[in-house]
Every structure is written in structure tokens, then in C-alpha cells.
Length: 123
Image (cartoon, rainbow, N blue to C red; front, side):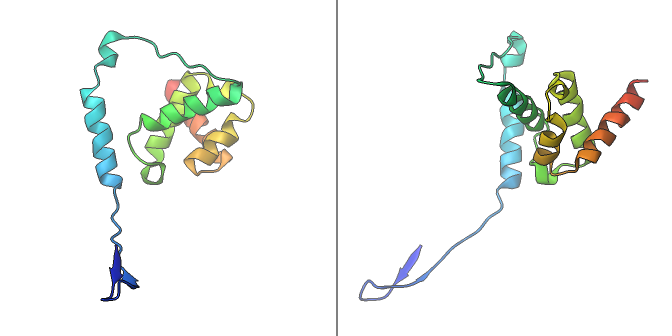
């Protein structure tokens, strides 16, 4: 909001910054709670131009499933994302490790460690 003097000249500005992260997370939870698409068990179709778009779609949906911004995700959340990407075949795409590491803001070695940890859990 601009602050003006009696001559209508701008002499200042008032800004209010507010962190909306909690509200956005709550909105996602409520939307997920109210979503009835799972009852229909319909599969979602995705139309893409190339394999990279498929990989991005798989990664983005896995991250969205956590219902947290990446900056607030813990190791357990990252493990769940890696598990979903693995189950959906994302790691069959060349460069998937690097792309997922970038999106999760972790190193490629962390992704490899997560995959190793998931293999141990399956055994």
C-alpha cells in the first residue's frame, strides 16, 4: 500500500509479509480429505511430449503426495518420495537420480543411499 502526502505524492509504502506455508499445507490436507476420486479407482491419463516430462510428472506427483513443501521435508519424507518414484519406474529414465536430487535439494549420493535403505527394508 502506498502512503501519500496531502499533494498525492508517494512518500512511503507499507508492506506486510506473512508465511502461508502452514495454510497451504492445511489446504492440501483438506482437499485430499474431500477428494472422492480414489473411490472411483480411475487411472489418470498423462499426455506428454517426451520421457523427461514423464519423469517430471512422476517426481512432482510423488512430492505432492507428501503434503509438505520440500523445504520442510525430513529424511522419512524423502524416502517415501524415492520409494514412489521407484515403484512408478522413474529410475528407469536416464538422469532420474540427478533430477530427483535437484528437486529434493539433496545430493545424488543421498538418493543412492535412500535406494539402498529401501532395498534393505524389502529384504
